[in-house]
Image (cartoon, protein in one colour):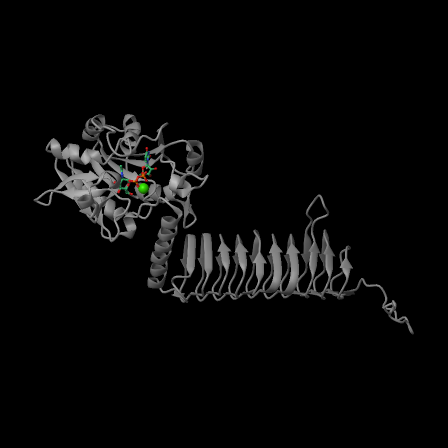
Length: 456
Ligand code: UD1
Ligand code: CA
């Protein structure tokens, strides 16, 4: 039987108290819905139908990278009503898996078990045993321990509320039967909504086999309704990710203090100190050391390179055995060859640096090509912007730039050239020679400092 996945994402998410639709709230840097779609894709279904509500255009735009079918639920009349909006796009011969846009940590393995339990003709619901069932629908079983119905918290009696087996909201069943059950839903409940959960009672009444599959972990089926649950899910996700990194051999100073918002690929013997944040796709070579309070986005860092504390690195290609920071900022478009040293309070943008070169203190290097074994002195600035256009600076191999130099681009410093400290270089300088641009030092003999006037 072929599979169609329906993802419910039309709820306004009032409890988030946010202008951003709930399913677009980020978990590990990716919208909640993105996580659910990612898992659904792994099941290789014939199609995925996402039910959206008011913020439809925004939700569709955020999911533009995926091939999805969309159904609109104009009014949020409940989860059952939401599934009904997807029905016209589901082949009645298919099996349907219903997922929730706000249950993002679910694992493919669990869903495979749920689909298997549904078989060709049963209804299978994923349940969980939780310590605190507040807010969830409760699984009601009969004297023979068979699932009888699901009761929402707002409709539950005190005895029913005491039940700790809850509905995760995830259901698999034949599409044909689903259509029949949805037609019979009534909104005569505490919330005046068409509850999807009522199909369980309907299925039992008509003699359809109902299977409950118990999820292995409570975390995996966590439904996210507010910022508190969002933060709990984030920590759970990050801890699981940290554990898997450690299993791969990465040393983490503290698994509770690393955040990966994307993909982190590590070589052998990588060490990561506390409060490191990785975004997008980051690759760390063998023996890389990432020290504390560092943010790295979409970058590749070569073997043996050490990132000292408090660096921000975006879209950079860093070769082996470099030393970066502390307090360095690499903006997009930086390429460093091997054994480059960038020190504290150094900012680079769209620049290429040859092997063995050093920019050690308090510099801005933008739109620049630096050769090999260049020394850029403290406080050197490339003046790359004339107020309208950006221009390039080129520094030849082996050049030595003294401290406090301004290089007014476009400008070229020849190989092995030396630039005297404090120079403002606006014309290209010859290779191998010393160039100094500096006014003569004068001494004013006998000059006296002004003194404070005495007032009586
Ligand atoms: C729902 C279940 C509850 C379960 C819990 C698990 C129902 C009636 N209740 O409750 O048994 O324990 O999930 O997390 O199904 N949605 C729509 N349209 C609507 C209403 C909701 O698309 O009209 C979507 C939401 O965007 C969300 C999902 O359905 O993704 C669940 O809705 P929500 O309001 O969060 O339901 P819960 O109260 O959490
Ligand atoms: Ca929910």
